[in-house]
Length: 295
Image (spheres, helix red, strand yellow):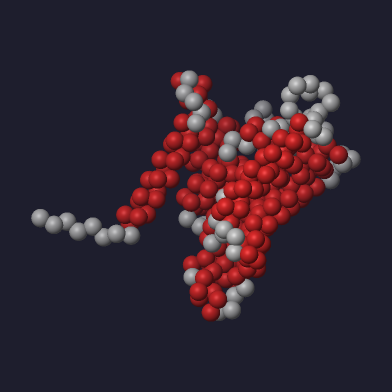
């Protein structure tokens, strides 16, 4: 395990975690980042495989991939605002819909011509491949996007009138209604930004690492779910994702090392992440109680 492997895992966690930190702060509990990541991968793959290559290919991949992620997240937000649907359930179900969409594409109309029995598309052309740092899998343009997203969302949330409205809505919805804030619009905007960043992460995975669209389990190692912990640790501050994303990236990379060195199952990482989350929840609950020692 090296820093390059930690960096590779950090990139999608940073992008998704920063967006989720914003969404959670506003009160939109987006559990569908995994599906939004896959939607971004689909959008990026479409541009790479079916549009003429050129210098516009990578920017267009990010725009379409991020846009599809935003639309997928925005749909859940619209269902909540319009019909009162619980976004935890809707975004969770959306993950399964996109999962089977990707499986259908790589096994059917988008399956590569020379891949025989494998389920993936043809390799992306050079114009659709992100540059990397040396011989590593760290695709630095997406890393820069993640850093910029964390900084930008932090400024937006704490230095603008829009961010002030977001914080009021998240901390006290009743006060937001009393002040006449348009809660539905604010939730929808936060959901769109969150989904857009998850879509960018999906483009980064297929254009920077795999260089083709594959089965969902090979595109993402549960980054959308692990990023929930990244956002939780960030405590509603997107900037803190710059610290929490590498921490979870280290845990994921450590899972690979354990699997190779000790023949342990990779899912031991899920156990560690779950224990970390339970510890945080327990610590928060205890911090709200006053302990009195009596003799």
